[in-house]
Length: 593
Ligand code: ADP
Ligand code: MG
Image 1: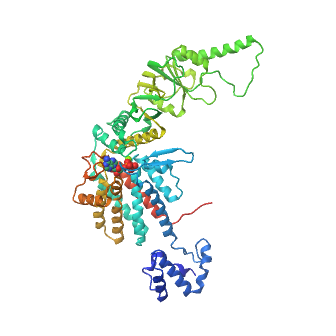
Image 2: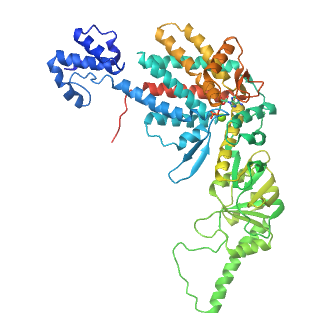
Image 3: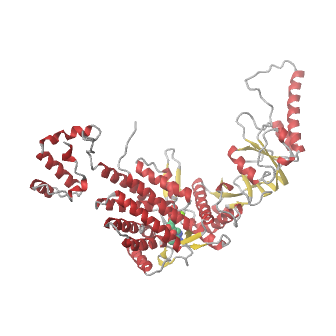
């Protein structure tokens, strides 16, 4: 029975002529290329061999017949098509937000919170994606976010275009493995092309670093503030690394603090530590030559482990209880004072009051600034920023017995500053471990703006980090992609062997045009004429011709100072190709119980 259905979908082309019956059926239902030959075959063979009626029974048994051959031969193709179209839908969703003139997305979650963003990774992260293949694209943009930080929209758009190319190649009957292999070859060549068109950059070249940060910020919602945010990002990274030796940047060393109020113009870079907590004792708000202690124990009367009740029967006993408490607290505070501490940070405690009123009273009298409710996750940053990082280690103080002068960090100034009309911040500046950590205070009039500003600054920081990791730049504005398209098309012609290889490699090169054409489309230019003109210029050797979105045309994009790190483009290309290849290799989706 199985032999009657073992024709695979594309097999009709080289199958022997099935006879007159099939011809007549085929011509009657000439609608879709996909369905027609299949129905023609099944009808033909059902008519020819009566036993074939048992086939449905076999396919109920897990799709295998008695002989062990796969019955449902077109299932892999269907799975592939379904995966491709689901993933493409995701790519189409972010396509319009590519580039400086791209659109933004407004995302609403089930609680009603709204996010406005232009960042591909953020859009996809918040999107509710059900299809497993579509989820792969979400992961793809996440991977790009981790690897490079920028280019999270581009990577998804490229993957979408490559999938489109796959779809067409599959329909031509080219085997997925061949497509996958030639894509791999093309991406290897592509990385060479990109590297060849890049130019080295020195970290001392502030101007160029600024330009690349600006390019990244340009395509954000907060783009009009790029002249403020770009220098801030460059300075922040330069402070936390040693430009001569650094091979990477730990972005944990740059703390971004969001504070509602003011405008983005009020954003600032603080060399040191910024806390959003308030000073607990309002008497001491400014301490020069600060000696900072960070404690993890509580300044309040100790409690027993279990619930307890003390019945006090007379005043003398009550006095004694109070006196004991007073003596206990005073002893703690005195030791703190003795060590020379004049700024005290207290970690948040969930067990009991970290700071009793009595302790606060004593500390106030001794002119010690107190900041309580320090979050556990901030401890490490604070230690690195201000405590004795350079001396014995970064340990916060867990017990009063360890409260000694050498555990204290020092800073020139600890001060509570008020931001005109919108709350207060504590700033610790002039720390004794300069160049290790910085803080960026992001201001904005509402939550939407602040959060988008934070994401944009993060992208700009990542761009600089990319340049530290791999000190090379390439032009932006679609120039690298069109150069790739032209060079890879040339390369595809040199590929020997099967014709299919060339076709796939050529389709790959063609797909990369999606970036310039989308940039043009989003900027309101004619995508077809722009891309044709660009291709022409690149074929003639003008490697730096790119889309000038501001003036609306094509020009030397390096002169427009639109530059981006090489790492962003390379990682976008390789990650997108990797994902597309793995989607292509999937031929079945299995659900588990
Ligand atoms: P991504 O999330 O991928 O970084 P963006 O929205 O930031 O997406 O767009 C990046 C693309 O926009 C890059 O291809 C870059 O070359 C291009 N681009 C950025 N600024 C300009 C500009 N001023 N002129 C032309 N192209 C630009
Ligand atoms: Mg960007």
